[in-house]
Image (cartoon, rainbow, N blue to C red):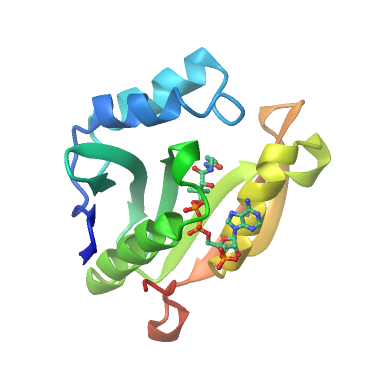
Length: 165
Ligand SMILES: CC(C)(COP(=O)(O)OP(=O)(O)OC[C@H]1O[C@@H](n2cnc3c(N)ncnc32)[C@H](O)[C@@H]1OP(=O)(O)O)[C@@H](O)C(=O)NCCC(=O)NCCS
């Protein structure tokens, strides 16, 4: 899918370097080295789509398929200089289109819950809400006590597609 100079690539495994490059530019979200490297490692075997401008990787979205009918946005990131230009929406829309075409009906994403009082993750939650996700449950102990996990969920009906323009 193209939008001017911007290309959203189909999801493929093995984009470790691209993911690491973007994650390292997002220390307010991915400041813990171990967890950053877990995402990089996961990219080896997790389908990941990229937002590219020419040769440059601007962002990525990693898709974990749990069951034929359900999937998870395992990680999403975009270089800060490109935030709020609609690229996150484009990546989300492309991921949902791909999943719907493959029969997937439910999508979840895990993020930091309100109780952690993070200004950065408050913006992340606004993004997911704008993408049509609803809050499903908080898991206080899934990660660490100071890192409460909020699960967002979304049904992938034909009408629920994230706008891609
Ligand atoms: C989450 C992220 C990929 C969103 O990408 P983006 O291109 O900036 O988002 P978009 O421009 O497509 O925004 C789509 C909508 O989400 C909402 N939104 C996104 N960023 C927002 C912000 N900073 N404040 C308020 N609303 C926001 C808006 O409703 C926006 O629509 P609008 O611009 O028409 O009002 C990007 O902000 C990012 O990389 N964040 C840091 C990493 C991160 O949070 N990863 C997830 C960890 S769980």
